[in-house]
Length: 397
Image 1 (spheres, rainbow, N blue to C red):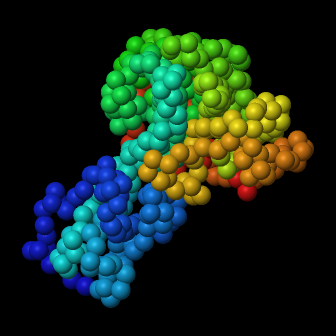
Image 2: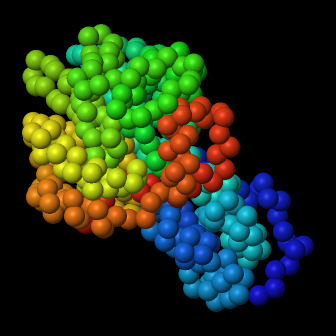
Image 3: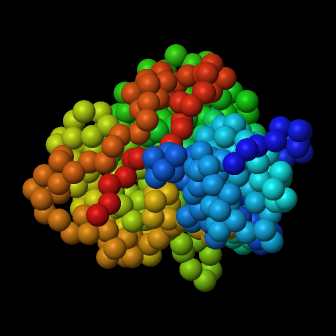
């Protein structure tokens, strides 16, 4: 097929922002998202959102090689949105399809831009106690952050660096002042927003005392141990629970919201326990030692919590969970116990499996760990493709 450059449209008229695309999807518009990357790129990391769990794939070289492929696989009666890594190949595809009469747009910035798109779900809204909790989901990366508000004071757990797109936006929309920021552990797959958020808001930062951080920041930082109570506001506290295994100092945070009718318990587990998987113990090169600690954490702490405790992790597995707009990623201890088979293993079986059957490690994880260990602000980092790809902090069967 010959592409006639005289029909080329201006790039701007053929582009759509990643956030605008999400809004179209949330409004139920029937867009046809076409991935034009290589099969290898596609298998490693996909857009995957709502009704688009597995988007069609036609590599850009195939588009230019066969008009029959286009006619057979791309509908003429829908808006077409093309996608690649950074927006270059998808723009070529959009220009070609536009020439052929398609209503088409290219995602500006490609997967790198989609990697900054968030969705929000409500965890709890208790007017009686003036307590509200939100889950912010970084759709493509699989990161989960939380905002817990008591009155107008708010605490943020496991923030990423995309502050303006996520926690600051939510705080502004709800009239909240962020007073505390917490990291459950030293993240290996994304740069933490903890220090940047603390500096921007004047909030107190909380990190695990056993985690091996090297604080050199001028942010207000408190290192906490098991049982520490971090005030959220209006008599509401988050209680630190030392849950080692994914990392040495991993700390979960317990929240209880009580009313006359009932009491609901929540546990923010970081990467220690997920809704359909367990944390991996190998990212600090002590797989057997950490696996043993992780098994103890499950059996002696987490599985002894009340069965209706709601588990709220820091990640979800993008290969098995497709985010639905506004639908929470969470599950109870009772359900997780039944569904995650690792939790019924003996310690010997668990350690042996965890030490040998680990998935590929997150891209650039050693560099990311070093950045987070030294509590470097997001503004000091040239992010580039540092966080490209999905998270890989869980192990599942």
